[in-house]
Image (cartoon, rainbow over all chains, first blue to last red; front, side):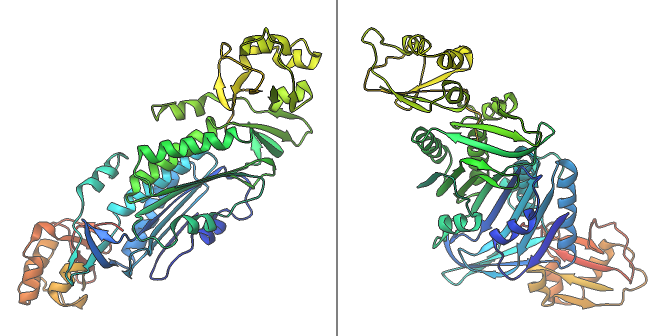
Length: 153
Length: 153
Length: 83
Length: 83
């Protein structure tokens, strides 16, 4: 039921929305979130952000969290796409789509999935700044708190 | 900053997403919600749902709620589209998009706007059932509660 | 005065909109409703369930004691059900 | 045994992956780490901040006392930062 992909290529929100909903008339609402590379990090302008993942383990982790969301909310389908490699400001990073008969389930599942993806998913990020320096991003407290709102870790 | 439209024509999520985000590299996330006509209402199969609005007042009310959301959260833009007229199951009804530097603002604003649109917006709905009967939809308690979660009415 | 009806009020009145000259002794929404009810059995049926009728004067929600004048746009409709 | 390194561990070790024969006296993650640290200054630098190193055995998160065998895939990486 879940579509999971980790890829270097870009994705298209409209196309993924169509793939999830096409030919169905039992869906009441589809919530989505697209995460994009911002042009600054901690107030400093960046050139790019490079995402690294653990091929195999990352996809498994994404599948498990999608299953957990489907078990917790009454979903009719969900899509989790995540890009890896070097991305410039303005480029898409991550897409979540959640379809459900009722809007609250779609909204809650989407928020849950993106909170998890942005904090607990097996990715590592390196930021390259305009001054030529680069650094790996540390795990962030504020994001961990966001996940904790959902109960299970 | 907000794009507001009440229209009989369909809308395209991908096109609206592009219009909101094009040429920007300061956006961190875009949350969206699409509401769709379901093929049943209260367990009974429907043929169509007809939406009526108060031209002028409805657009003003949508503009005001979009302004309220922009004032409450740090948004970089939002889009509220709502269709009127007779819609078949599977057809789009409503679209919300909210763009922000940080994902929580985008997610919260999107949820707030769709809760308001689905409960407080000046629309009236009539359902036509497969057995030939039709009836106006009553204001719903559960939805009012959803709006109350946000504090202001 | 322009009076608008929506949803089942429109169906019961049999009109979406009417242009009326407000009698000079009518100064608020409650008075306007009492007068409209006398215009036809459809009007009477539309306003029979007063608890379910909402009003807007010049596109702002209005209570029964809100002032109305002959230059206003007044709309009557059921509680909104959202989209 | 296949050992994988990610992010700054990969950069410090200088390798993303190595195929090793596990010495028979090593049976858990802690023992594996102690042995890997002796392999090069890069390995030593990678594991110097043990608090910041996470491990997975066969793609499941594993603690220092987790069992490892020569047929396992063991990965070391910093705390995940999400996408």
